[in-house]
Length: 95
Image (cartoon, rainbow, N blue to C red; front, side, top):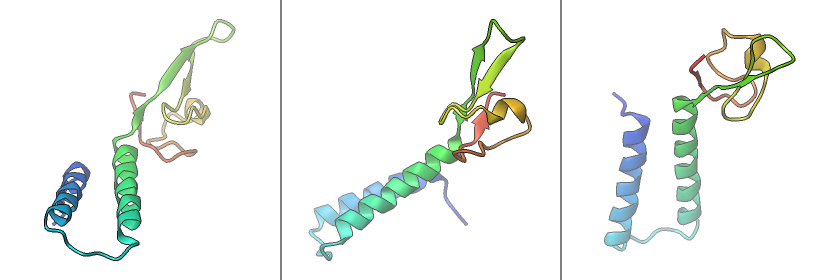
């Protein structure tokens, strides 16, 4: 059984508070490694939630240009079947 990404981030924030409140001794590398792990969890959460596409209307071309909302890659315009941006890996919503 697994929990959702938002619940996992909240859980690890509670673990951090518990460790601080109980004055648990950790090695000197623990705070940095914990911060790195939290950054990874937040990144994976944001990546799975995705970003909406940017639609830019063009006067020279017919229609509009569709780009990734995270990195601005234009390859989504050529391949509307993409569910994830091939450039940054974020989920693509709103296309």
